Image 1 (cartoon, one colour):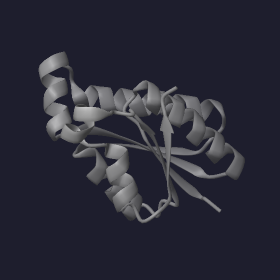
Image 2 (image 1 turned 60 degrees about the horizontal axis):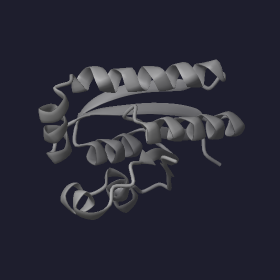
Image 3 (image 1 turned 90 degrees about the vertical axis):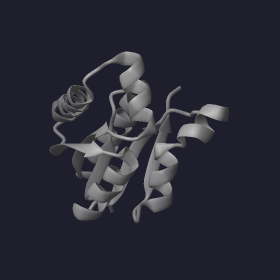
Length: 139
């Protein structure tokens, strides 16, 4: 059914839970797991840079490396990519250009004003992706 699964990860708790879910799916289905993290631009990135003063490129690389280690330990075939840009746009683009059958991603569950101001990456991906999207909310 699904031969190529895209996991979009940012290393957050919800992304780690999505990683576990994606690895389990890929393992059960014998699918290849494509791991993507985006060093982001846009309103959320500016807030993160101001508040945390971190290296987004290094965070993105670390997120895919962590996911790759987990998948490899289960014998799941993987590929990795780090992109720079607006996360929801990059996720949809990678899915479209790599014959992805399913996207798996975490959702942060933002609510209220924060959700209205920044929106939801997961919602945008669900709206714009041409393939099914599984979202995993942090528990």
